[in-house]
Length: 117
Length: 112
Image (cartoon, rainbow over all chains, first blue to last red; front, side):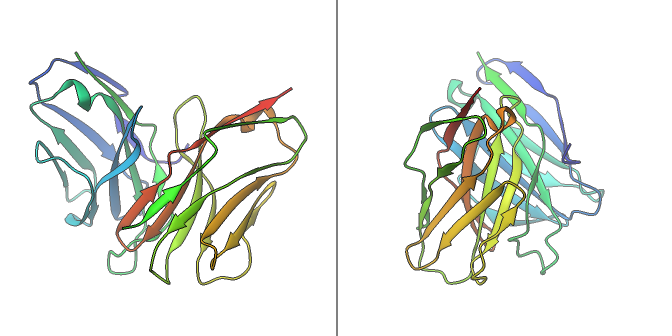
C-alpha cells in the first residue's frame, strides 16, 4: 500500500458525459501527479500540482482539467468524454521539497478504471 | 524531446534464475533521474528502484540492481533469484524537474 488513495476504483459512463476522479496523496506529500494509461499508449503524464498550484503540464487534453485543494487532495475532471478516453487513470504523489521542482520518487495510487461506452 | 525505449515487449525467466530488462533513453540533459516501476496484474504501480544520474554507483535494492551507463544512455534492470511474484509489467521512467516520461513496458513472466 503506497498511501495514495484514489476513488472511485471503477467508473462506467457514456460518451459526452463528465466525470471527476479523486486522489488523496500520502501524508506529508505536497505534489500530486496525474497519469493516463491506455492500452495502446502506455503511461502518459497529464499534469502536476504542487501545494495547490499547477506546476507542470504534459499531454493533457483541453477537455480535461485538474485542481489541488487546500487539504492537498486533487481532482481530475474529464468532460465531453469520448470512447478513446477509456483508460486507467493514476494519481501519484511525492514530497517535492525543492521549491516544487520534482524529481522525487513518486508513489502511485491504485488507479481509477474509466470505461466510456 | 526525451524518449524512453524498452525494446523487449515480453520476456520470460525460470524461477530462481536471473533476468535483465533493458531501457535506453534520449536526452541532452545532464541532471535527471531514472526509475524502474513494476505493475503486477493488480495494475498498481510499484517503485522498484531509483538512480540519480549524477551518481556513478549503480543502485541496488535487494534482488534488484541496475546497470547505469550514462554515456550510452542505458539503464537496465537485473532481477536475481527470480520469484513468481516478480511476474509483472516493468516500466522504465526518465524524470527531470517537472517532466516525466515512461517507456512502453516489458512484460516479464516468471516460470515455475
